[in-house]
Image 1 (cartoon, rainbow, N blue to C red):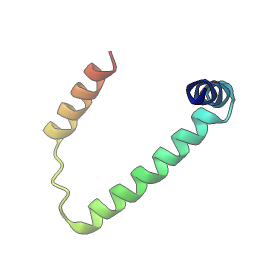
Image 2 (cartoon, rainbow, N blue to C red; image 1 turned 120 degrees about the vertical axis):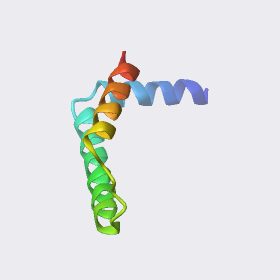
Image 3 (cartoon, rainbow, N blue to C red; image 1 turned 180 degrees about the vertical axis):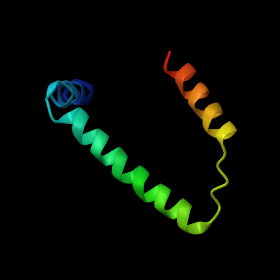
Image 4 (cartoon, helix red, strand yellow; image 1 turned 90 degrees about the horizontal axis):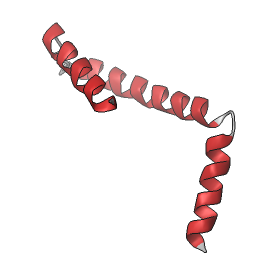
Amino acid sequence: MKNVKLSKLWDQLHSSYWFIPAVMAVAATALAFIMLNLDRSGNADINVASISAFLINSSCALR
């Protein structure tokens, strides 16, 4: 019975028009705070090679 209620709730959330934009807004806010803290700490050793490796790995993971 609990599974059915969770499934129904997930379907209602997922089919509404505000769910995806709300998740994206929360993720963007969290990422902004993470990036600010990383920048302020001075431990951000980011170069072009690490960025390109990250983008290649993330695009392969989405396939």
